[in-house]
Amino acid sequence: MKPLAFTDYDVIVIGGGPAGMAAALAASEKNPKLKIALIEREGQIGGILKQCIHDGFGLIRFKERLTGPEYAWRYKEMAEAKENIDIFLFTFLTKLKKENDLFCMEFTNPEYGIFELKAKSLVAAMGCRERTDRQVNIHGERPAGIFTAGQAQALINLHGFMPGKKCVILGSGDIGLIMARRLTLEGAHVEGVYEIKPTPSGLSRNIVQCLDDYGIPLHLSATVTEVEGRERVEAVKIAQVDKQMKPIAGTEKRIPCDTLILSVGLIPENDILSSLNVPIDGRTKGPIVDQFMHTEAAGLFSCGNALHVNDLVDYVSESGKIAGEAAADFALNMRSEAKKLLPLNIIGKILYVVPQKIDTEAEGSIIFYFRAAEEMQNTGLSLKADGKTVFERKYEELKPPEMERFILPCEKLRGAEKLEIVLSESPQKGIETSSEKKEADNGN
Image (tube, rainbow, N blue to C red; front, side, top):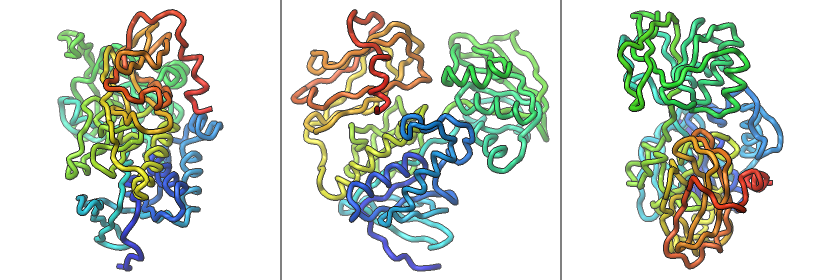
């Protein structure tokens, strides 16, 4: 094994996807004298984007419509051009602890074997993983022909293999919708997309472009209850569900197929952080952070889909940039722990808000991300400091799959003792609408 040339870093970024690449690049640009390591478990950086060959990426970040590989390639070239970023490929983190204000990590890869690195600050950008058939309690055997949507996407787009010819898709997440179209274009027959909830889980535009345009039916309040087949999937049993999402007796029907594709949700990857006892938000499944993506463990930052599952890669990169800059500041001792960190209390039908806590004494602007807990029309969002409204906006429509975003100058919260974010179903007249602030929210 070849020896390491360097083991002590200012910033280490775990995960070389869009969030990790943006974080490493931002830390590098913050101060070219910093030493940064970017850790990636696959053979090249880019994350899931490498297999997303459809376009629609980069409209906010690059003002262009790019494919996933094109978006990843731009960040890859920028990161590789930085002399102060060391990129480790095929590298896995096996141990993580904190000693004497340093993050001490053990890694393994084919080039260096088992080795240790240390860092003043750490950015967690591990992304998210897909839920599998074992996590949604489908009865039956475990034959060949059951794939997550991401696995099916990789088989077709990266390896050139068709997962099957007659497919059923369970779940209406965005990757599942995109794969319904992809499978159809490659000659497979998609029997239908079945969603256990009464509303779709994917973006509206993907419902139209991936299902409606190809005549693929979407069945709501329905789920797969059983898989038939021993060696290979032969059929699935579908049933309607009630309001508690329990199968309704007598509604079962058998659908012959050779493939079951699962698009039943994503889970942020944060298991490796357990040794640091980082508080996790039960709503997002990611760490609790302030507006700088700083967790409650000093020097640890979280971003991208490891923080909360985003619907646009541009916002993944945006949070990575924030985390990378803040991690660089921390490593340079330019930013200590917040002096006055206030929790943001949620009132109304809000699924989650990021950041969950606010450093009210900090400078700059705060980017908020939130999702509604259910489909709502004509709603009003307000942010209150000590009961006084400092921001408000009207939304004609809110849907859980579609993340919303707004920006607020931190000075508006200066000196506050209590913060609340409120979503009401009867907004006041005269407040700005979401369309009026769309351009600002897109970073233009």
